[in-house]
Length: 99
Image (cartoon, rainbow, N blue to C red; front, side, top):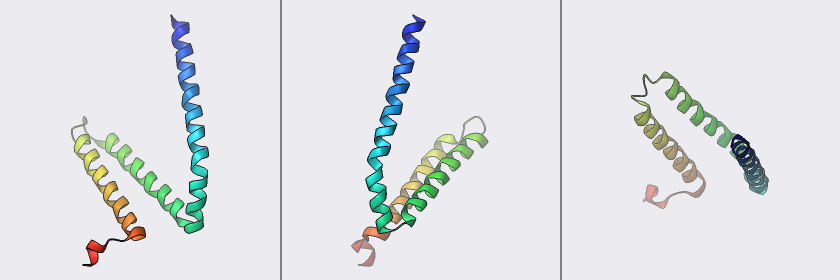
């Protein structure tokens, strides 16, 4: 029984590694195009992603008994959505803002 479980765990880990590898290979051309347009896009995306993960980690560490973790997670998700939409507005623009 344990051999079957360890084999399933091994195959699951192998599948996950293959999936991550193929997604990483698929992102290469997209990153190249982003670097051609503006090299700072990749760095900005990396910094914002790091900031988001750090803020969620700190919220989880400092929340007492998890009482505020749900509202903090929701607020941080809304904040990250707002930042993403404002960055999209920089690139695509919105006619509604200027009417």
